[in-house]
Length: 110
Length: 114
Image 1: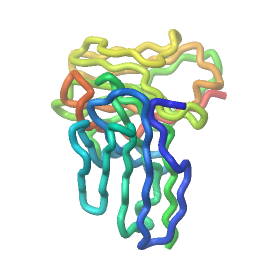
Image 2: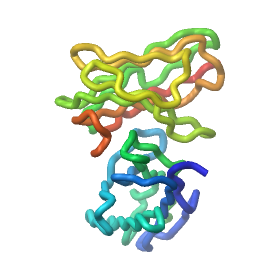
Image 3: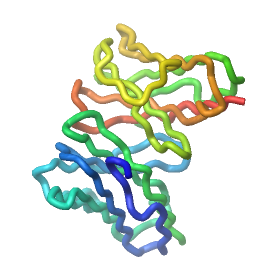
Image 4: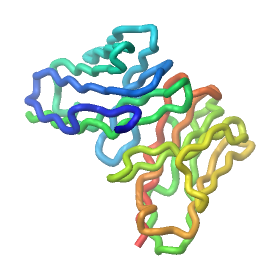
């Protein structure tokens, strides 16, 4: 498996529901980031959480980090059709350059 | 709009050819990163430049090379192209030399090798 892996690979929900995506990684990290990518477009930064933080919020997004389990979760509340995208976690193994996972494809159905 | 500009947006070429992809980072950013995104390999880090100097190397093939110019724009050169080089190539930029913060991505250059 890769340094960072998102789970599930694909997720389909109804508008208004919450979406939860998970990221697991293997090595010690300093930071973990979540990015969104609309089909064929560039990645857009959503949130960064440092290794000494456990939870961060940004609008409808909530990110948690559990360094003991080497895992993070991204929760999108009250999802909208516009949230349909791929979501990637990126980790910096041993403080080196960020490595991206394969992503979770989220479909929000109207 | 991230402020990172990549050209060309689309490029179709033949095997064995050479292409150059160009990236202008966000104003004030000194680091430029190149990533390759393909269906089977995901988003792969290729190389990073900081203020004109190579800073870190990832999974970059010997057929590929990059440089960052004094005005901080960067070019990624891909030569002896193979079918498997077809991918989206992204440039990203950040302020500092170490990868501790947000990366700003361009919209990518889609390369198709026929």
